[in-house]
Image 1 (spheres, rainbow, N blue to C red):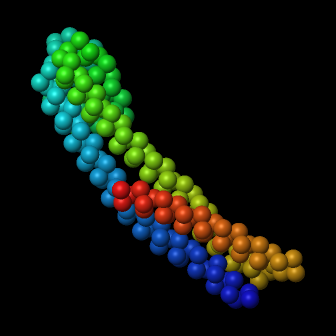
Image 2 (image 1 turned 60 degrees about the vertical axis):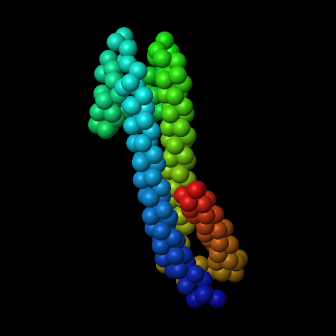
Length: 181
């Protein structure tokens, strides 16, 4: 029984590390698709903004769509959807149709940013649970021979690690399913 448990504890880290690496591939591709979507939305936003400029604006460095894109590509903006919302709010006196279209693009951008944050947070939780399980199982191996098993301590550890591994796999499923949407 002890050898079987030792094999179990040495197999967990290998399998979970491989699964987490595979998940990171899915996450990286999904994050790239989010970046492409935000780029496309910013180009659309800049095109509408560039065609409907007024001279009076509080956003002095964003007087046109070209300046908006220059600042976006230089990564001066964090939270691009908030910047888009501020520009929409500021331009209420401009061409009403253009402001409505700018608002729609800002809403789509907020949605993409929200999805992006969700998958990043899910990946963080996966890392916490997965790495805790991996490190915990590696820590038990050297001490397994010294544990007096009359109280069933190894079985308790076994059950705990089954629960942790199952939880990790549930997070893997959640991340991969949201990455494939």
